Length: 312
Ligand code: NDP
Image 1 (spheres, rainbow, N blue to C red):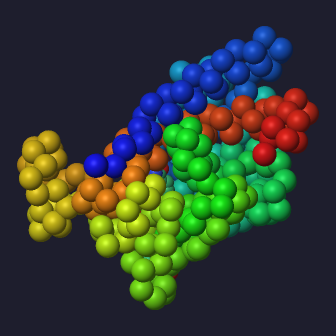
Image 2 (tube, helix red, strand yellow):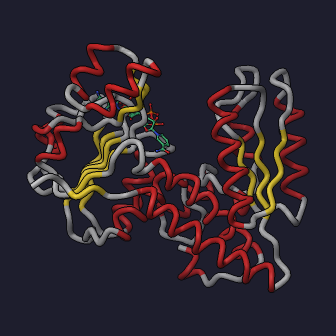
């Protein structure tokens, strides 16, 4: 039986409407949550992401503002902007779109964001809160992975979970969230020996490597849940053929656009897995939904409106 497809678009829409309802009651209580997005320069991919974030804010009723300093900005000038946003009470969330230009000290800038407004959850204070199970802001994509699992009724406690990838943005926080949810967690990376064998232990396999279609059927325990975080642009016809030969819809897209988006998981995995997130339409849509969620969570936590239990 082919894997059940876990619909990230539907789950993200549910979260966004829950956030919109929450925003309404916050506004009725005199609080309008606000998000400031800082986009340095004109990176086309970043422009697309930022537009999506600002539009999502409008849809759920969150105030948003965009700051677009020139790409020649200095670290000092960017720090001054962050300090100003930290001070302003009507701003609950500050998001600095990465990557920053080479002359800017990215770590210094991310460290300068007030942890209470760090809606990306990248500040070491929030990383520490996550690893010690304290209330804080959790990175958006990893939080989205957990929402997909929970809202799809996938049991986590006591299960074997394997996380492939150990980045600060995805792999490590996903591993920590799974551990906090009582899974038995293994974290893999480029030096892991016999990756397919380690992955075959997984009841829940999360892939975030940035390697198109690398997770093939021999990585999968039959019936496992597979979450594909990878987003890879495939332009090479041979690679396209390896992944999508016979998929008429994809072939059409590839022919007209010269590229298609692929996850880290090979489509053949659908024949072995129990449940699978597609790319596109799986984890991707959750990232912005969780950013909206984090912004209202920040607004509530800053004002002492969330109990520490709920804030976790
Ligand atoms: P990074 O490049 O920072 O990390 C990749 C990780 O994968 C590293 O830990 C690396 O190991 C590991 N890795 C790479 N190749 C292999 C291999 N052959 N075998 C085993 N492990 C390997 O990427 P990110 O974590 O930032 O992103 C991962 C993917 O997720 C990308 O495709 C990205 O586009 C996507 N993404 C999607 C988001 C979404 O909204 N859906 C959001 C963020 C990312 P090592 O540490 O040893 O180098």
